[in-house]
Amino acid sequence: MHIPDGFLDAKTALTTGVLSLSGLGAALRQASRHLQPRRIPLIGLTAAFVFVAQMINFPVAGGTSGHLLGAALAVVLVGPGAAVIVMTCVLVIQAFIFADGGLLALGANVLNMAIVAPVCAYGVYRLLRRSTGSLRSQLVAASVAAWFSTVIAAVVCAGELALSGIVPWNLALPAMAGIHSLIGIGEGLITMFVLAAIGNARPELIDGSNGLNPKPESKAFVVYGSICIIAILVLVVPFASKLPDGLEKVAEMFGFQYRANGQHLLAAPLKDYAVPGVVSPALASLAAGIAGMFLVSVLSLVLVRLLVPDQKTATPSPE
Image 1: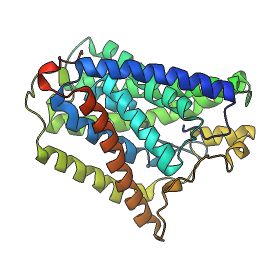
Image 2: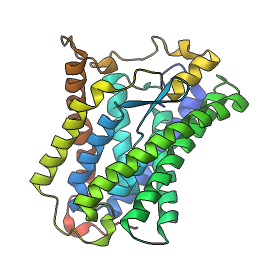
Image 3: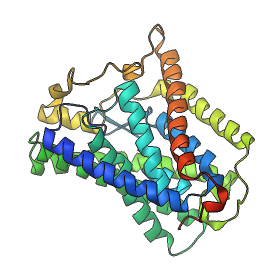
Image 4: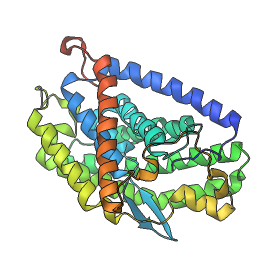
């Protein structure tokens, strides 16, 4: 769903940029008030996982692929404000380093995937979790929230394309919503599977507000989590689907895919996740993935460290 440069007109790019900055500012304020310092290492790991997971496209119907958005997963693990920060860091690194998503369209991509998707996921998750606090109910709630966050983000993207005059709203809406409703099923299943694995090993991480884990995350936890993410990078990313993703498929359907050709403003150092001098696609994906993991983790951790410098100043995050 990463919008490249060339798909949006100036007014839409500017408007979404302003909205994204406002949303990010609100998320930073929320995180500064409620983020628990002991969960800061988990933010870096979540950012790294989301980055790697977005490299893995899985096939869906009609010659289309999708990848994990990760908004609902981030919301459950680190809370809504921190989830916005995590998703924004991922998108910024993708755009500037890997040319995945346009620079002029960065505001729209942040709005869709880093603000609308986490806020939607948080609302649905909170609503569905009210009945019971069992792990099973949390997993179901997270899965449904993941589906909704994917579809709503796609609907907003369709609106941006329509406002830019690229494709009429009555065509963009059913096309984007239809394809991403299928992608959302994969999103929900992957989110449920990942949270189930985490919940069985560390149930306190699924509900960080319950106070079951008062100590900071250990170095062993960070190392183990990093090894698991690298294992996914090595074992799964090379087998990612090469089919066009949802937005690319819609662009092909309505004939505006050519607008993205040669439109990226900067010469990204690792464009298309290719590493200069590395011929093997598998090794290039591994090197690019490790570089991306490191960059998104550092960027997200720097932001939250500035926001939460002292354990004494933090207050518990809301449910």
